[in-house]
Length: 105
Image (tube, rainbow, N blue to C red; front, top):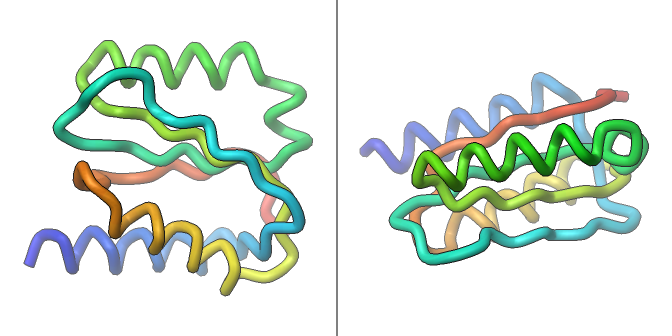
């Protein structure tokens, strides 16, 4: 039940922010073995502007015990982004949540 609620929440967040399709995306995986993961989604322009801060945030999450995954890309269609998030959600270890950084279009 908790997984269904988490997945529904992720989809809702995607729809609210109006993020869209990947033209090109880069996945920066977690470093180490973790019991759970956390997804950080950011557009390429925002990532380039705040790369140091975003990587520091990722490191803090990993220090706290969450395997942080960073997804950097440009989107023009929400269905494509939703598919990427769902793919990540279905992998192990469990995906506990996500944060969306940058511009929504």
